[in-house]
Amino acid sequence: MAEQKVETGRAGSAGNKVLKRLTPAAGILAFLGLWQAGVVFYNVPSYLLPAPTEIARTFVDELPKLLRHGWVTTYEMLLGYLLAVAIAVPLAIAITSSQRFDEFVMPTMLFFQVVPKVAIAPLFLVWFGVGTTPKVLVAFLISFFPIVIDAAVGLRSMPSEMADLARSMGASRAQIFTRFRLPTSLPYLFSGLKVAATLAIAGAVVG
Image 1 (tube, rainbow, N blue to C red):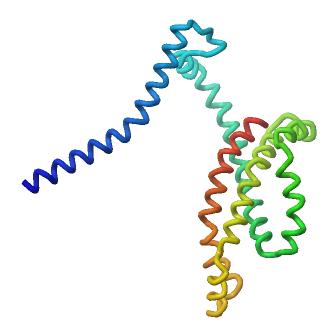
Image 2: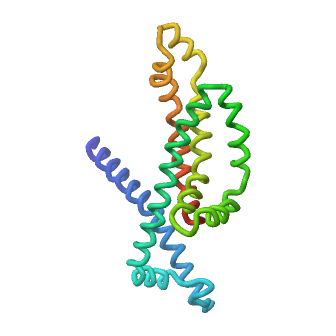
Image 3: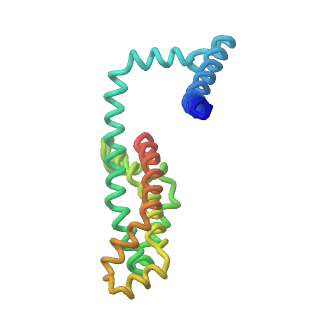
């Protein structure tokens, strides 16, 4: 009897897992079905709203071109994103390590943060021409600020009691940073990296 209950519980758990995985796919299929039915029923022109089947057919027909241009956009996005990481993380470390440097650089950062990035994109095109450079710079500029802000917040999130305890045990400033401050900041840093990755794609497309 007990073995039968265990097997029933396992079967129910497996069924719940399968249902949990199929539910999102069912929702997507229902949305596409309604979309297709609405376009066909109201006879919507394809230039206003193409049907999913037409989009899929065009995607297959233009796949080589999409792959070629998609790789260019991916390359520009990755280059701008990596450039933002390479500059933002050391800058966040410097900002949190020196109060004077923080006061020196923060007004300039706030100015560039409030300036609309889309408004700067045409200037990059005028300065650097039509090519890879302006697109990489736009992707860099958009993804830079989430990384540096979240990294700085994370580096400042270590409790002061932890720093006092490390100093009382004879830890050097470098050891406090590598063994306490940096591990504490990782959740904030990865959160900023995740947000910046999405913004870098938008930046490359806008560029």
